[in-house]
Image (cartoon, rainbow, N blue to C red; front, side, top):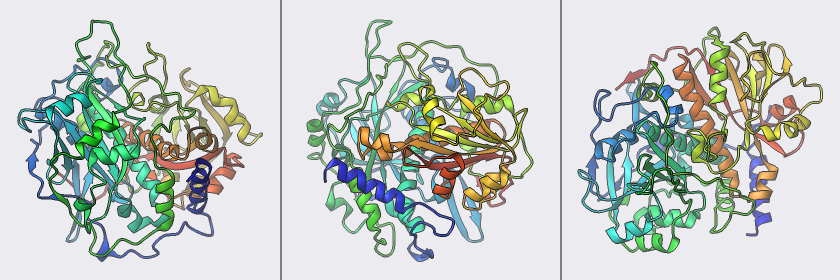
Length: 562
């Protein structure tokens, strides 16, 4: 399939899976509860290594939440089994349970639309006391908080693979089981799987920050190399089981270790692995066979298969891509005073089911939340703030806000441009009647514009598939992506990255809401074209990919913590 054919396939899929006032995207119609996919993948026959589930007062201790955003204020933890356990506990683990009658289900630190959890996690790591005396590839089993050792990796091969990375670096891989989302959402599920990858990337980066560690997306990896690395193309290991699709690989490392380089000398972290070395891993000793997730065969959604094929990233697919370098070191900073622990905020994060329709948010807190969504590049040498240092591309997603209850700020429609260089382009694409004034007290680092004053609660509710949470919160928003030019500049594979960026925005908002004493939730169901018409977006230059709301939560009696 040629590049233009792939882009056309993506565009057809995107148009086909839009919700309209009179028609929703193709879906299952009714849920086949007997065939609901198992949210927990296991590899039968793979040795299981349980991780210590650490209490809040066990080392490594959590820093304050606000310290995560002060570079260098969190002392880098040594890579130990306990530290690795803490990383997974804060990133991909179960955080609570819910129960209704005899039905019980798990909540996790990485959010998932519909609590369906299509994202699986893997680690390639060297020898570590308490884990193994030789490098290996592991699958993370969240229900057991344990690693399944999938493959052995010789010490020489591991050293060669990781030679260009900082000391003690290891890899975290992510894959998607499309069927888990498609069971409930049909063709639109591919979008939601990509949101969830973005949430998982954010959860991993923020969890790493609690340890003083860094993380970066290995953007240049081809999907085929990810399949080789994670064993996703091993047909014999998935016989009769639902397949996983390659998503992303991140490198994680203790920031205080720059590979023995002289003080002050920056080491740049590569965004690639040697495909030939990765292919050697496929010939290693592999263990375990994937469990079947559903009783019956998955329902086949041809549109998902087509867009998944079109968005596969091939080797060298980097045209028009100007990735920023990622320094390995960390500049010293100063820790803040007081405030909740990061671990507390991470573990208490929940998706709200309903807003109380009353609780406001102070303008100062509102501005702070938006500031943490800005991938500024004002720290030499062009160091982006956490967690935006994970993604190597310029901001391509902006926020169309429905402000309802922000004290000191007039209600109405607002626009947050996350790349100031694109302000005029966005304004030209929107209604000419929009005023574009800056609200009072807005910090200089925010490009926030009032578009139109007025009560937008009913409008927000209507646009988000008539869901009251969009109008009953303090504010809600739509994530507006640079769509057409991004596809033609980078390629069809970048479609998935736009959703990843949206999911990462959502992950920051989730935790910011918790820190503010509020709660948030992602909204995947919205009427695409009506959203565009409200803001005057008439062509495919910009498209809304994800909605979100923040507000005062209504208690959920089904919640069981622990």
